[in-house]
Amino acid sequence: MKISEKNIERLLLYRRILCGLRSENVENIYSHQLARIADTTPEQVRRDIMSIGYSGSSVKGYNIIRLIESIGEFTDARETQRVTIVGAGNLGRALIDYFQGRRRKLFIAAIFDNDPQKIDRVIHGVRCYSVEQMKEVIQKNNIDVAILCVPAAAAQQVAELLIEAGIKGILNYAPVKLSLPSHIYVENRDMLLAVEKVAFFSRQH
Amino acid sequence: MKISEKNIERLLLYRRILCGLRSENVENIYSHQLARIADTTPEQVRRDIMSIGYSGSSVKGYNIIRLIESIGEFTDARETQRVTIVGAGNLGRALIDYFQGRRRKLFIAAIFDNDPQKIDRVIHGVRCYSVEQMKEVIQKNNIDVAILCVPAAAAQQVAELLIEAGIKGILNYAPVKLSLPSHIYVENRDMLLAVEKVAFFSRQH
Image 1: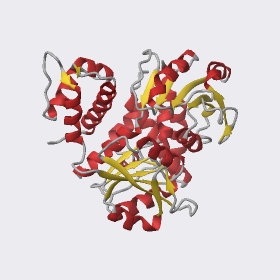
Image 2: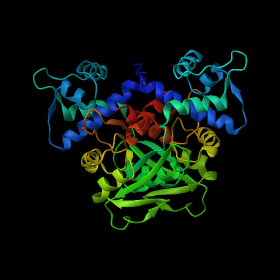
Image 3: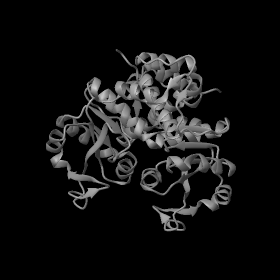
């Protein structure tokens, strides 16, 4: 089945919302309630959820636990998927902190840096390796996703090393456009652009 | 003029690309070249740039320095706009590091935290205040944009305090939906959802 980026973004957002409701012991939810929290329409919610083969009851709505499972079956890897962070600065450390243990099927297996002070240390539970060890560590640990937290000037070169080592998807926090083969999935998250956007719209309101 | 979020995102991205080219002493660029780097179409580039009242030469393309200025005149505040970061953890510190001095018209004026160890300290050049001082500091410094780097459980309450203090736009890194008045502009950046999305598409490629 062909699924769009927007489609998967919404499903992952629904899951985050549903997990929050589950922790408050809510059992069921109607499409119009989920739509309101997710800033979308009830029709969109029903289409998205139908697309993963789940359906609710028109009387009780969706069962939250089962819907969380269905979204996971669709979006998550069968086995745990391994992730690496490149760049053990503040952002890299923030990501480990924020991330580790939140998702059963995603696991940060290694971090890379070129600072000798950081190499071979364990940072928030994750071992830091030198960039020279990248290929070996990525292949040995079956890592296929990388989060790029390096300065702009280093990003393209590091991305090429990651791909050589077998990485299939990159979440790029470096403020630079990467030129990579089309079979590599890249998601760009420039934090400065995000602040600039909010600054612009905060003046319009 | 009515401008969409996508429109402003593209203009800010063009500017980032153009600033990179300027630092390599490139003087002019054609719409098809800019489109290729920005992953869009030449028609879209021309429409976006026409919408801010700038036009290039069909022979030489756009003059890069003047186009950077034109985008700035459209997207930036006339006077410097002040920003605050709430939460002086790794992410807050990463943002200061990354941000400070990059944009003439945007300035991080204060950081807030509730950890007594951090309050009254200067972190990467920015003073950290207690949450109790929020209203006073935000009003005195004319801050209208906030970046929320607090845990999910604290985010809604902190956002309400920020709005009470006069904040108009929030960049929300906490993994939670905020319920705020509609005149407040909110941009959500859940880092875990971003990793999950990349993990999904890295398996499809």
